[in-house]
Length: 367
Ligand code: SF4
Image (tube, rainbow, N blue to C red; front, side, top):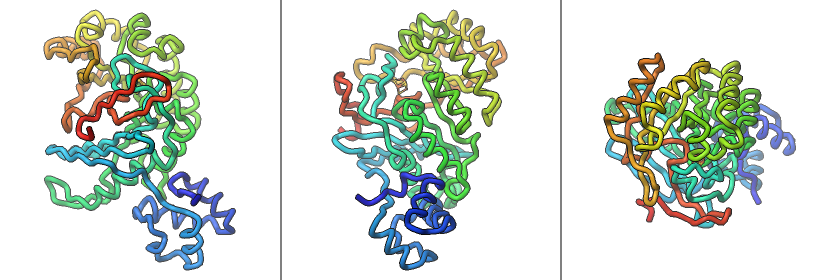
């Protein structure tokens, strides 16, 4: 079985090259060819010695997950469905804006955390994605988008993906080692060179893993909050029973000591009549008082048999104003690309559930 070089960060590739008797600078050259130039064919790595190219051709590949489907929205949004084997698919979304291009990346096939409003949570859990499957999403997006001209300026961007959010399918911190290795590649100047401030991990609140992320690879952090008290959050985000809000808020404060940004982003999906009332907004104001933060309000994006409704415009306005009047910065997520952008896990591919629950296939276009 050839070694997939997308599985390595630079230290990993250097160690593998050492086993071949090759020097670290050779590993750096190949790493740059792969991630900066987007080259998968070793024959095209022209400044690499022929003998090494032949060795690599015999022993290695550069292989991202296969694209099963690519949807282009009129607003410039791109959505890929990647085939990750045995009937499973994951989604990746690129959202272009005037001053940035954001890629939303998946970390698992399905998710085991069972948030009650989440389409991925309803599908069950299959497996963690490998490093090559995580970084492969960025590799495909960056290098395919490089060939496309900007819609308004007509220019070809050198680095179309300027920001990455780990908010696709799965709980990133439940796939800790693979996610941290992939983050290392995103940040590496020999690869994508993204700043820590422009890479965001979104978690539902795995407290011990938040502390480990602060030590190993502090990037920007978003926390999927969705409720202002434990009773409601226990229902909506069941991991709250293990790590209740007081522990989560304390973990956020600890994280900020290491974080590249001086605030946490709290994601809050508004569910009509469930967590979108003024009393909930006022509870949130108190809950977050000691945590420098911003709120991102996300109107629920209904899916079949969800059991929840989208909030009304007036309820959203009142909710937002209560937070703003208390001094918080609040954004309300716009709908982009046919409702494809939502909270952690709201991207739904297709999952063969290995945890025994009903399999739901929610990806309309691929059906
Ligand atoms: S919201 Fe995130 S953590 Fe919760 S089930 Fe969905 S993907 Fe998992």
